[in-house]
Structure formats: structure tokens, C-alpha cells
Image 1 (cartoon, rainbow, N blue to C red):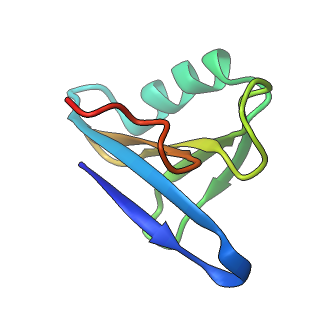
Image 2: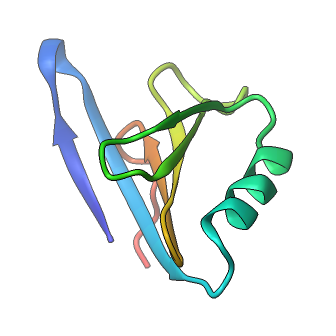
Length: 88
């Protein structure tokens, strides 16, 4: 699923999000992402999800990958500048 977003001061971005179910615990999935994204900022959101926010070095300013790990589910969101996602 994706969308186009327009923010303050002309900020525009496109997002794609993938949702997954898992039988693994939240901690196990979060531990795996901690090893795969060691430079990601780690926080918790209001719903108790573990959140990994990572700005790839090859990305433009404002582009990022966000992984939200919940209980028996997680989602990955990619935010890029407009026009980078190809039609499928």
C-alpha cells in the first residue's frame, strides 16, 4: 500500500508499506532488525511498537525506512521523494 503526502514548506513524499504477520515474539523480530539496521534510531510508539527509523546513506534528505514491530506483526514503510516508485 502506498500514498502521496504533502507537508509543510513544500515537503512532498511517496510511501510504500508492507504488512507482515509472524509467530515470533516482538523481541525476537526487533532483535533481528537491530542487527540488520544497527544505525537505525530506535524508539517505542504509543501503541508499544518498537520503531526503527533508518535514513539510507544513498537516499536524499527526508527519505527513510521505518520498521514498526508489534506483537505477532510488523510493517515496513519506505518514504521517498516523488517519482522514485515504479508503476507495477
